[in-house]
Image (cartoon, rainbow, N blue to C red; front, side, top):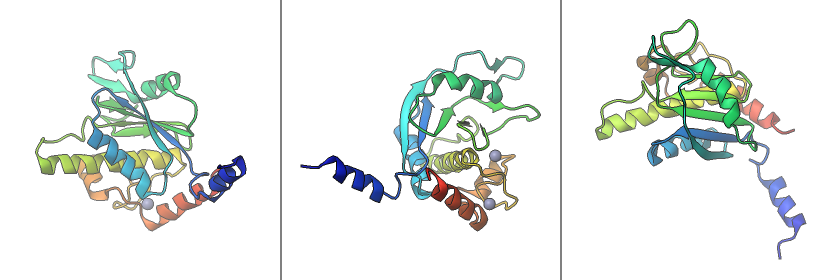
Length: 197
Ligand SMILES: [Zn+2]
Ligand SMILES: [Zn+2]
């Protein structure tokens, strides 16, 4: 019954059809509640084309045994091989501690206005009671939205309560939370509106 013309009309009417699409890759053991939390982040910012595509193995190539951490720049490079075509942006969630040149550690790293980002849950984890779980998921959301916005072209923000401010510590992450300030939100809206045009 449904003709192709009807389907095309549906796509045209879907306000999200031109939205940037994301694929999320995750380490083995990433849980359903974590996945749900990450998905909510996108929904709350109007980015609906999100798919969790696959588990992946890290390997040891980017491990620095002296620092006992993984080099995030090296990982981002390697993740090129894991990308499945079909989305604009690709986010890799890892459970190991990561660093970038000139830092002790980082929560995540993204190619500005690029394709790939990495988010580490290693330092977001806290005690395993119910309130701890809630705080952890809030942190996960905050860091996922931060790196996603970098992927969409947003830079760091000087407002310490904005998700796009730089986190040097968990205190920073907890203070800023997952919301964007009005300036960053309007930038994001402009970017998303211009997508696919
Ligand atoms: Zn950042
Ligand atoms: Zn901001």
